[in-house]
View 1: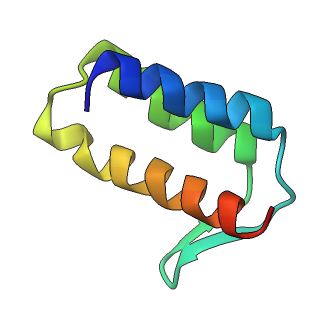
View 2 (view 1 turned 90 degrees about the vertical axis):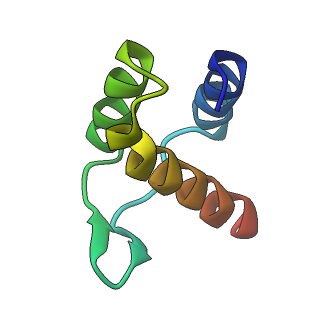
Amino acid sequence: MTMQELEDLENFFTNAGKQPVPIFLNQATEITDYDHFLQSHFQPLKANLTSKVNQPLIYRLKTLKLLIEANA
């Protein structure tokens, strides 16, 4: 993922507005605080986008984007 792709993803969530919770990404991941979820995922990615440790953050953000698009 490039910095531009990250900015595009962040813009998507900004434009999508706050979503109702809870949101279930999968059987093990429930989002109960939408704003905190986004902040806690974007902050480490902005600090070190290429770190392999951050790959699950990208996956969860992309999964959430797909859910929002599917329910729009």
